[in-house]
Image (tube, rainbow, N blue to C red; front, top):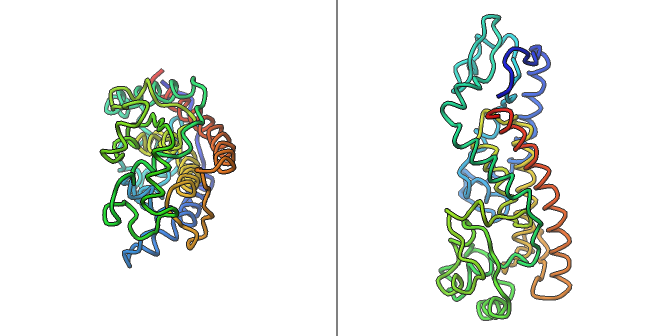
Length: 294
């Protein structure tokens, strides 16, 4: 565990500036979602991370410095009462690392082991984002998840793409949304129990999950890192939906036709670039986990 005898002490002006910069960045990244919410308007790309992961903009906006950092002069501020924080005799406030590990140590260890396992594997880039197609396979217009948006190839065309490809999804939380007709067509039958054994760095959903693991380990993860994972997850979701069967051109997302050789080539190129970023973020999260439990 990180040594508590030699923490970094941040003066009030320094940590306040970091807090404010974080809040401004969150506000910019979530503006569209917050503007749409009172009117109950939905955006299939920008709203997804809040709907799927159930982490609100307000929660994302709360700034945490991470382990081994003391916030000078914070003893009389509300954050001193936040869960998993403690006030020092000198009036500084810091993460209660020991208390956090006592309460959440098994989660920290699981995340470390999962991300280490994913990081150790080569990226598989032969899935072509077909999980979104498998979620539409053999459905009717009223059954699809994003019913407000048309299918580029229609229902019959979408089914034909699924039937002409081998589905190779390794991510349980994507696979569990496959339609009954699509699930048996998948090369693997992922389960929650096999998560550590199956997930790999080329998977778009595993990349988006770096954001999930970052906020689930709050407040032990520095919020700058959590927000980096959020921005990366948004880039992955953009690729996900551009390569999906939905036509989102009206929202400014040019379709990426993975049913064509050219589309496949472009998908793999972007997938590889994003996988490299996913792994870099995993390494940063693994380091935080190591600070907490090793």
